[in-house]
Length: 396
Image (cartoon, rainbow, N blue to C red; front, side):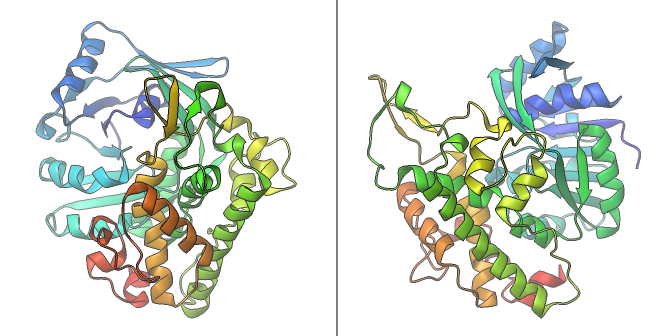
């Protein structure tokens, strides 16, 4: 695979980090695709003024800037060998449908991260481009904890994972793509044997809704002074850790059921939450004796606060429209729940979290334990894509 031009779609925290990281590790052209002209104008000034985006990681600084930016996909996608989608899960499919008519006949498209059910939306997109040879991949998680400090100027890399999983379609491309991205992102990228693992091993679907549930159940309407806003990951208590462990156990029960029923599918990369944390952050975690300790002594999570809305009177309230819920429930937890229903596996802890946080989001996904809520069509459950039995899901 020869990669000379990369197009990044989006301008969030991850996109800001990718530009200097990739430029520091790989000799290539980087294009940016935005859907809004005002963002194009901001990044165009960087190019015109020969300025750079700085990624700060501890005492190290990396620098890079895009070579071309546009809101018209024909201007920044036609020459791309690699398309990267560091986007919210709800935007992935619409952006793909927008850019795919303008792609080369042979191109690689990757979602960073994939989130649950990414492969189902791919099927829908691929129906419109049967004449093109496209390789798709997804990363299990975002490789870094990162926050944009100054838009189009500076991004903080608060911590990076020691290892990140990658799965691809066709599966034969997985190993080579893992090697490419190990070099491209300067992080160990591990090949994962199938896309189903990405859905089940999507750790954000447990951690983000689970911690939100633990922090705010019973405190939904509380107003916080700025100094009282709880830390997110470092705010994990023993009770929150218990909730997270129970959710993880529900996911492992589903994984065991699938593995026992379908001997030809490898799901060994679906780990318990504690095992995943230790594997991903072994150089950042000081004390790994308990799940709670894995969170509160993880240096990569330092300084990250729970998402809040500013009430503009000196007080804040929990933000239940943050991506910790709006992404990790409809494009994560509810997808796994839908598969568990097909497998006839009970997930009591996952159900409790979904029902509780859905009310905060003003959404309805579960009704009497089934994926029949009024807002279920907005999710990426396999049933929404005509996949109504386990055989269809596994055979992907």
